[in-house]
Image (cartoon, rainbow, N blue to C red; front, side, top):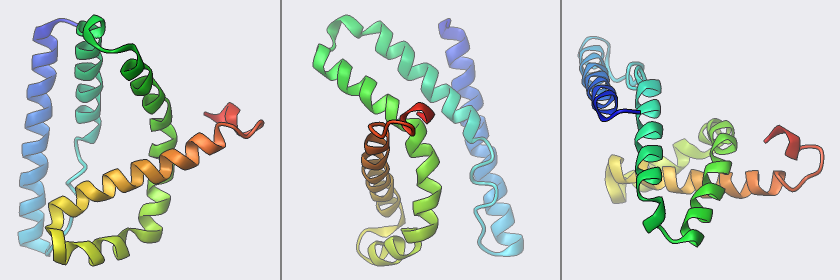
Length: 139
């Protein structure tokens, strides 16, 4: 992908984030707290992140240690399963996780900690399921 298209997609991602933030603020002022618009342009952001990371990875492939490359590939193989399992655990334990940690770390750090926790927990589950004979075909 050419640099101008990556730059254009980056601008679209930034515009989508700004629009989402504005809608969230407006909706919050009119109807009270809501994150209904917060995920409005997630797909554009995800596509941009994927293309940018892939482009950077391919550009610097020769400079990256082979064991680190293999580690990244293995993490990448887990992401679809993590994407599927995260909503399940979010419904089960996120509220308790959030209420416990926000007083100590604040909302942003707690969200980052949730992402790490969810990635590790779901990653272990997916890597286990990938070893189960009939289930591994799903991943």
